Picture 1 (cartoon, rainbow, N blue to C red):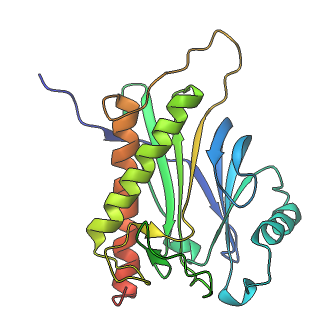
Picture 2 (picture 1 turned 90 degrees about the vertical axis):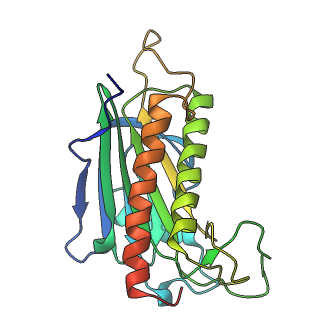
Amino acid sequence: MGTPPPVASPLLELELSADARFLRVDLQSPCQVLSWAPWRGGDVLASTVVWHYVSRAELPMNVDPHALLGDRLRDLGEARAVGLLTARRLEHHEQHHVSRGTVGVSVVATVGLGNALRAGDPSRLDHAPRLGTINILVRCSQRLTPSARLEALSIAAEARTLAVVESGARSTVSTSPATGTGTDCIALATPHPAGPNEIEKSYAGKHTLIGELVGAAVHRVVARACADYLDAHPSC
């Protein structure tokens, strides 16, 4: 008998604000969240991740995104959340969950490709970047060591890039195949160990089940979100 395929399972709890300005994701338990998010990036303990939709007019060159997002999350009562910024309408978010046995991965993402770039493109610091970003949250059921979390984050980034390349999106600077955008962010959430005897997995690469599920789930979600964006913006 072969290995059974991943199966769909219940998703994370998502709450879109009435005015569609915030998308709140309940991680269902305190998690270590590793990211370069504009609010509470790094390696932090959090129970929620919040997307904030901003219009182009709200982010002129002289506005500090960190300060803007922090003020708005404090007003929302979510100052301890990990915060992400996007100019993509939040109703276009995509989500997916896969599991095999006791191991599961949930992914939520928003994709905008107005700022699509290829890795290695000129930085063009003399030009204001266009808005459009890919924000991804990966929530794993397994506890992982610090090095395994970095490995899982790299698998998520690789899957993101594969989906963008396969979408046919082009760099806004070089017109080469895009590999992402200039402002992408990935947040990886794993259960926070409650005690010294709780087992943490030491590896999360392609030869592990958790690595397989992270790659499969991220690729599926980003591919769907890219297709949705490009259907509405065929010139990208």
